[in-house]
Length: 321
Image (cartoon, rainbow, N blue to C red; front, side, top):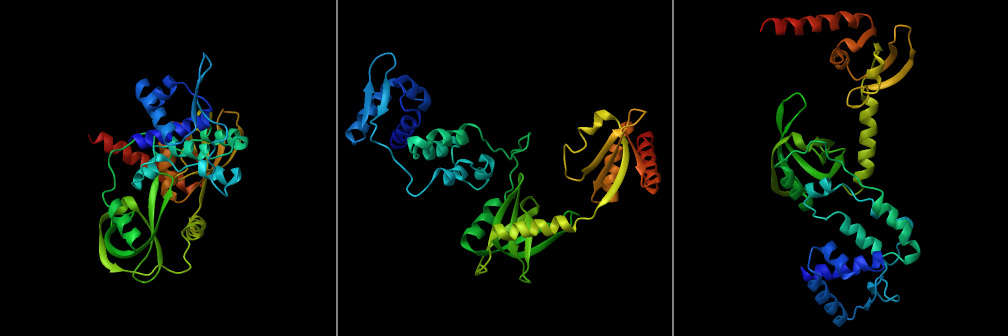
């Protein structure tokens, strides 16, 4: 613990140029006396740390002492400053303590580029978690990771979107974080690449049999191509609706099903004609009904009858109670 604290002191001094004993103690959560002992330890180990006296004084490192990541330019460092979200790293079992890693990177930059590097430390933070955190974690996640790291075949029970479960044997090739969800990319028993959402893996067991990874497989290239093919294969179902102006801003708050294609000018009755694009007819029906009297379907006309029928069914369901 002390060795880690001494390293953090050096990083803080490199990044802030000068800090008082009290500032260091507050930053590290220790007493002033502990900081003074740590400074003695740093001096004895050959680290050129000195104390400037007076009101504007404090601890600093000698000007000639500056560590640097060999071979890395600021442009290279920018990508390193933009870390993945802490949630994603925690899912993988990586405890990063967030800003500490970026502080270490910042400390490794020369003084001439440190100011620009600090912008990426102070002005960018990535959070892929949901607004409401859940303590429920996928219990199979660690098993999947183990099989992935060890290049072992994975026996799993997988639940499709329609609720049907089936047993699969997969050669795990990689994990992909898409939004706040994790996907497993693997080879099935027919040697075909497939994507599996981690939350739908009901049970998993790492087998004893190993496998050879495809020689030319690159996870990032495969995923980009797979995503492109998936989006191009999605069906498109276009509708036109008359919407209350107050609903327009909420129409694409979530883009899970709907894409707002076009919003025309406000009509004389105050409504706005909006063109929406869905994947399926049923998604369009559910979406329009969800806005109640604030949205009215215009086209296609045959869908109006289905919406009315669905609305009557809902009314009858509540009247039956």
